[in-house]
Image 1: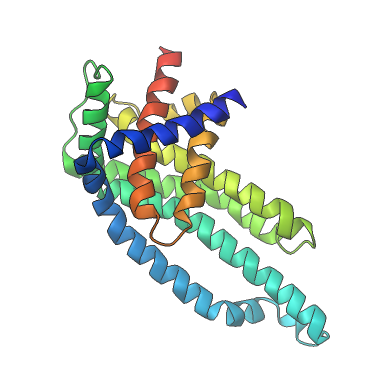
Image 2 (image 1 turned 30 degrees about the horizontal axis):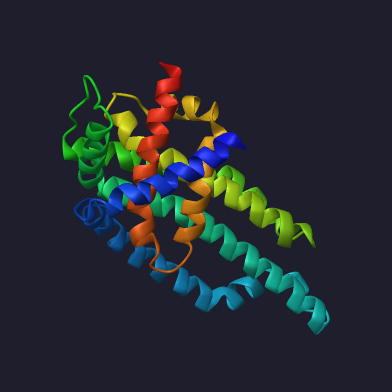
Amino acid sequence: MRDFAKGLRMFGQGLGILLRSPRLLLIGALPAVLTTLLLLGGLVALAYSIDDLAAWATPFADSWSAGWQATIRVTVGVAVFAAALAIGMIGFSALTLAVGGPFYEHIAEKVEDDLGGVPGAVDLPWWRLLGMGLRDGLLLVLRSLLFTIPLLLAGFIPVVGQTVVPVLLALVTAWFLALELIAVPFYRRGMDLKQRAVLLRKRRALALGLGLPASLLCAIPLAAIIVMPVAFVGGVLVARETLAESA
């Protein structure tokens, strides 16, 4: 619990740092604006068609009584939307951080300079940072599907599907989001996705303390525009904490 609380504090410290530097907040918000609009558009379209989708996925319930039919289809609809939200959150962060790579690298540099700098930092061109971000983001989305698809199926289980499954989805989303949020500080040190995943597993509670509030707040419409740069700065702090322990 101590590491989880520390992750929460680092998320809060990210907000404090950006409030003291509104220019950095604005820079970090720009990439999130575009991806937020894209994500909201997709979720609105899904919500509009969720009834038809749930009916299509449960043809076996056509002959059931109205009460049981409504129950199973509402359950399926909730599970599908929750899974789409989880996958969308991970994909959203990957796309935001990839497209906004040069912006976030600038923020990371400023924050880390204030904290003592990065000796021998790797200076990556924007196109390489974009490519690495998109590649790693795609890998994380695909890996997240290994968890979200079984959880989606578990959503059909009465009671468990409406209680345990949403909690597990939130934790899965938080973990993969944290891996995204700490990416740039690791890139600046010449370290790849595999290396940061290995190190972060040793501080899993710290990662969840950062990723959980970020993922939950990003589920609020338009909040991600502010939450993403705040969470990214928190990710810089988490990355430095994780790297310092491994040094």
